[in-house]
Length: 478
Image 1: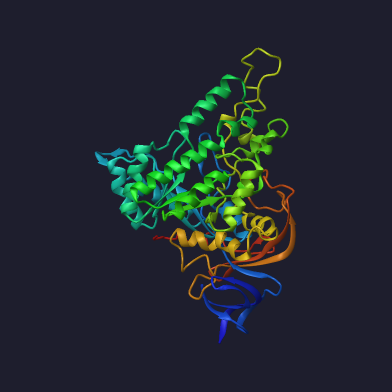
Image 2 (image 1 turned 90 degrees about the horizontal axis):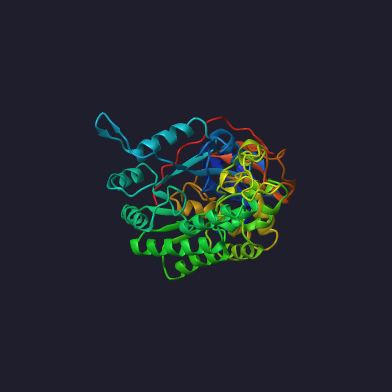
C-alpha cells in the first residue's frame, strides 16, 4: 500500500515501547506502523527519534493581568509551540461575573467560553483546548457546569490565592459540583493568608526588590495548600490536578495521595526543574524576569522533583507559559524612581515586587529542555519523557486516542526529533514574542527538526511553514 506520507527509518517512541520502523499517514491520521512502508511523500528520519506532537496542558496566551496582557497572542504563541514540537495547547477561559441584560441573567461561563474561542479560532496554528476558571460557587455558576462540560471543557481551574481565590468552603462546593459532572478541578495551591502577611511585613520593612518575592511565598505556603486541596478534593470525590508544583514536598504530597488511591495528578514545569531562587539575586532589577508564582525554589527541590517525575509520581510537565516583556512590563516603575525610602535613607528601595507581572516564557523549548537535561542526564527514560510531555496530558485531559501517542487511528501529530542537533537558546533562536528567555545561553543537545499537525508539516528546521489559523478547538471528555 502507498500512503500519503511515510515517515521512514526512525526510532519510534510508541505506547508499546521504542522501536525502529516507519509511520504511514493517510489524510490526517496515522494509518500504519511497521517496516518498509512507502508513501507518495517520504520523510527520512534515519538517526532520529519520531515522537507524538507535544501537549502543553498549561499556557496563558493573551491573558490580561491588570494593566498588561501576556505578550504572546494566539498566533505568535502557537507558532512558537509548533517550532518547539508542541501541536496541542490547553489554555484558560477567564469569565467575568454575571450581569443582567434587560432583566435576563447572563451565563458568564458559557459566554466567556464563546468569547475565548472566538479569540483563538482562525488564529491558532495548532490545535487547542480550554480549561474553565471558576471565580465563585454561586448556585447560578454551579448550574452552568454541566453545560460547560458538554461543550468540551471538563477541567476547571480554581485558585487558593490572589484576589479571586476560592476559600475552602467555596472550593469544596465547586469540587463537589464538578466531580458530580465527571469533571476535574485544577488547583493553584498556595496559602493566601500566609502570603498576604509576609508581603505586608516585607513592604513595611522596605524589602521591596525582586529577591523578596520568593521570601513572601515560601515553600511551606505551597506544601500546606497542596495538602489542603487534596483533602478537600478527596472529601468531595473530585479528581484533582495540582498545577505548577515547585517544591519537592508538594510533589511528594501528590505522590502520597495517589498511593492511597486518590484520583490526584501533579504537574511541574521546566523552570522548577532547571532554575533556582538564585536568579532573583541578579543585579539591579534583572531578577524581575524570573518572578512567577509559585516562585523558583532551591536546588534540592529541583532534584526531588526530577526524581518524582522520573519514576512517574508526577505525571506531566506543562510550561505555565505567561510571557511579559521585561522592558515596560516586568520592570514597571523600576526606571521611574517611583518609590522613595520609607526610612529617609539616601538609597531608596527598588519598586515593590508586588507590581511585577508574574509569569515567564517557555512554550517553545519544553521538549528540548526535558530531553537535554532529563533524558541525556539519565533522569528520564526516553519513554518517560514522551509520556510526561505528550501521552499523560492526553490521557488526563480527555484527548487519549486522538492526541499524544503514535497509534493507528490517532491524529498524525508527529515530531521528528534529532538527538544530536545542538542549539544554544537565545532570543534569536526562539519565536516567543518576548524580549528575553529565562533559559538564555543554555546549550541543548537534542532538538525538533520537523513538526506535523494532522499530517501537514507546519515547522521545519526551526521555521514555521504551516498556514495561519490551521488549529482546531478540541472538545474533550474525561
